[in-house]
Amino acid sequence: MKKYLIAATLASFILSSCSQTQTETETQSITAALEADSAYVAGIDAWHATRVENLQKEDGWLALAGLYWLEPGSNSFGSAESNKIVFPKTKIAAQAGSFILDGEVVKLQAGKTADITVNGEPVQQEAVVYTAAMEQPAVMRHGSLKWVVIKRGDKYGVRLWDAESEGLRTFEGLERYPVQPEWRLEARLEQPPLPKQIAITNVLGQTSQEPSPGAVVFTINGQEYRLDALEEGEELFIIFADKTNGTGTYGAGRYIYMPKPDASGKTYIDFNKAYTPPCAFTGYATCPLPPKQNILPIAVPAGEKSGESL
Image 1 (cartoon, rainbow, N blue to C red):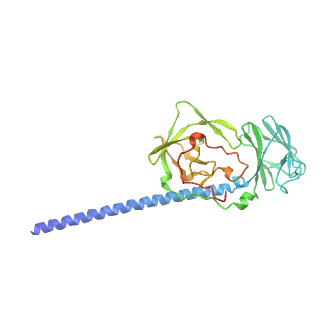
Image 2 (image 1 turned 90 degrees about the vertical axis):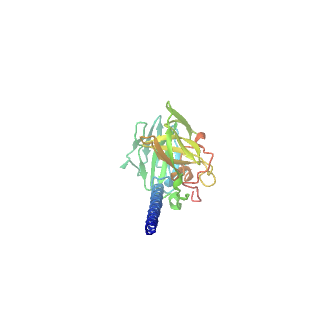
Image 3 (image 1 turned 60 degrees about the vertical axis):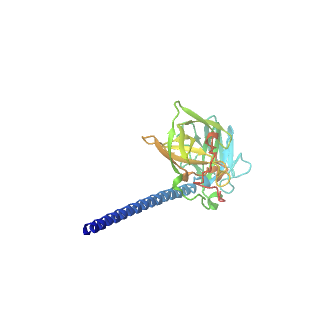
């Protein structure tokens, strides 16, 4: 009888020990998962903080103050209404000079009292500020103003920033959905057998054929979806729309960057990093719009919203 009691006691002890070990293991797993989620949320919050910081830079989207399309020949500019290009009042001389568009070359002819610099150097009379061969367009400045020449399709324009712009003064931050780790989805890049191009139309109505490395494929609630990607440096760039557009998010879609696939072909798309196009902040941007194949038939309640601040 004593042997049975000893055996029963030993068995009970072993079961108790196993149960305790299992509980400890489960607790450790839950703690690790919570810590991982907490670290992930902190990472997204840091990314968002950088996004807001970049918006508020002197050459960020909030500082845009003008976009002026050039005509062939001379385009006078300054604060006076008589100019072809009218810069903000009180910010520059009434007659600051002219932009000369000659084929694919743009020159700046500065007025004697305009006090304009090009790439940090005072302009004496004339300076070439844009050619197709330039890696970066010349940066022109006066006071709180900064401007460059841009090209969109066959159009040349002057993009103007103002470090004292109304957009910067009135910005109250960005609204976004709560960070949800479940919207960070495993994905793969479905590469085409032959080089592929997709049609991208911008808000100006211009359409261009852009090279695409393929479609990003992912699954939501058991359903597979595809989004055609563009390639930007070491990342993939996605222009997409979903059912939240026009209600919770910006009406013309959103953008997202994601890493290229690793050696095994895997990557991920993180909709918590979906962000609002610059056209939501300013009428002086030339945003690309989602191609029709990138319009998702579902809602993606993750990433940036289009709040009242926009």
